Length: 170
Image (tube, rainbow, N blue to C red; front, side, top):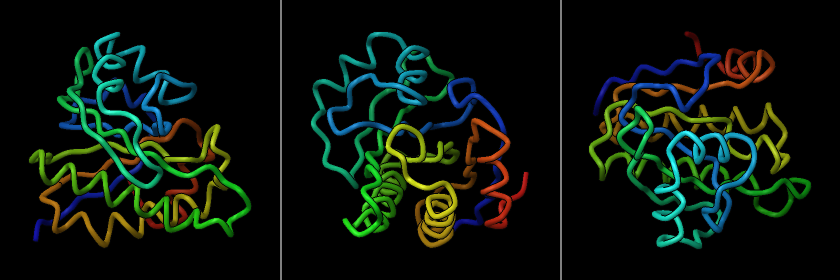
């Protein structure tokens, strides 16, 4: 078991110098909006080519590609659920997406990883339940993954406050 540092920061995930960043991907692994679009733009067209060879990816699962033009060595594409009211298995699928990302991090010998708030953008997952799941799963699985540093990258003060409410500091 590895001691894990968990923090939350207000930043642009595409600029972080970590082993891997996580993309809040769609099931086709195609360039999209929000953080997904930003990652694809920053990584360059090679990322879309690599993703097209790996897709589709079921909700709750993840795939890994090189980071191409990003500072991060790898991009882990985790497919979270669209929010459909909460009774369509969304919490389990979101938790599964985080677990799948940590499994790929373990297999890829990742020591530092940065996550966006998966599914909380265009997929409409309510922020506070989503961050609670992200933090709970991280605390459960990160120590056995070999990951030493987890950064939750927030795109707004509201998102940062949600992680702070879950006990995640800087």
